[in-house]
Length: 141
Image (cartoon, rainbow, N blue to C red; front, side):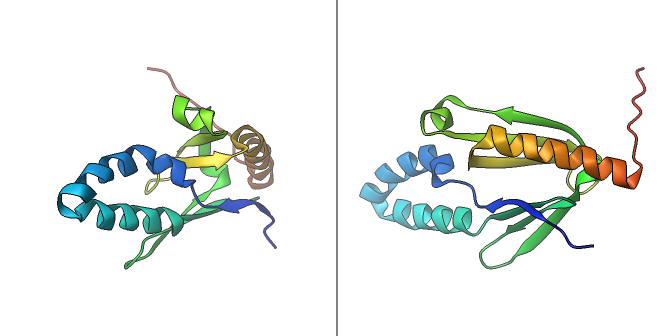
């Protein structure tokens, strides 16, 4: 079955704003800040996310690369977060809690139109659960 892409992209560089501010005095003092800033820039740029109607695929790394996947039917909870600084530039985060053992929490950072993407993701999660016949049962202790 062919997967349909809902969203794909990388986190915004605005997520590194505080880190870049820290790099400024380090650049003046030792030049180390420039190297650190460039590394963080490139690492963020190479952090690619792809959300399909079946799963979320995250590619990370510069020298060594890793790929993590979470099946949508495993997502238990989804939250839309707008920290103050990101809200000022029209960005937000999406926090996913899942039953996946290797990725119990996934934070999709610094994306544009986060509320719209969260809603598309929620609908895709519900549809995928229906297709797989997955039902969530919580036990309170």
